[in-house]
Length: 250
Ligand code: SAM
Image 1 (cartoon, rainbow, N blue to C red):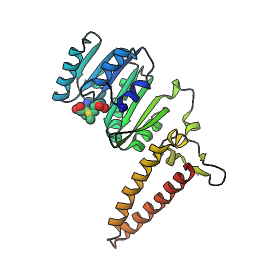
Image 2 (image 1 turned 120 degrees about the vertical axis):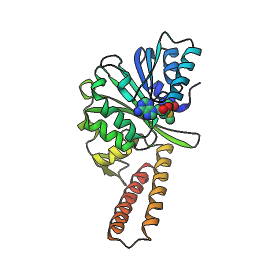
Image 3 (image 1 turned 60 degrees about the vertical axis):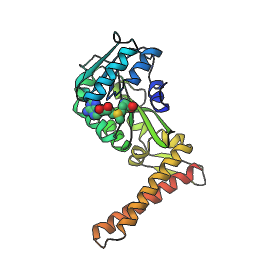
C-alpha cells in the first residue's frame, strides 16, 4: 500500500499515462501506477546504486518487468525526448527538483504533466515552473507521520486551459472584514491554490514556518551588525504578513 504522500501523486495522474518517476528509490510509485492503470508503461530512474537495485528487485517481484523499466542515471537523463507524457519527482528538496528539471528541460518534450513533491523549497520550485512556462494546475497539502508535504501538478503553458498571468495575478483572500491582497511573490511562496483552499494542514505548516522565522529572529537579536538588523526587519515584516494571511483563514 502506498503512503498517503505517494497516493496523492498517484491520484493527480490521469489513467493510461506513460510515466517516468525520477529518483524512484524502491519504485513504489511506478509499480502502484501500473497496477492501478494510471500508467500503461513506466520508467523508474535512479542515480544511486542501492536504490537502483532496490527498484529492480521491487519491479521484478511485482512481476512488472515487461511494463516498468528501471534505468540508472542522473535526473531526466534516463528519458529520451518524447518517450513519456508524465514525470513524477518526489521526496527531494524543491531546489534539487528545479535543478533536475532545468538540466533536462529539452527532454521534457511531449511531457504534458509534471507531478512534483518537494520536501522543502516549494517556493523555489514554483518560481522555476513559472519562469519556464509551466502552469500549476493543482496543489495538495497533507500531513503524514508528523511531516507536512505539498504536491504540485503542473502542465506546459501551451497545454494549459489557465494562463500563468491569471494564476499569479494579485489575489484577494479572506472575508470582507479582514480581506488582504496577495502579490505574485506571495502566491509563489505559499501556493496559488493552497492559499484558496486553506485548511488545518496549511495553517499548521505556516505556524511552523513562523516558529522557524522567530527562531532566526532570536539569533539575529544577538548581533549588532547593520546587516543583521536589516535581516531582522525583513523577517519581522514576513512574520506580520503570514500572520495576516492566517487570520484571514480562521
Ligand atoms: N521518490 C521516492 C519517494 O518519494 O518516496 C524516493 C525519494 S528518496 C528520498 C530520493 C531518491 O532520489 C533517492 O533514492 C536518491 O538516490 C534519488 N536521487 C537523488 N538525486 C537524484 C538525481 N539527480 N537523479 C535521480 N535520482 C536521484
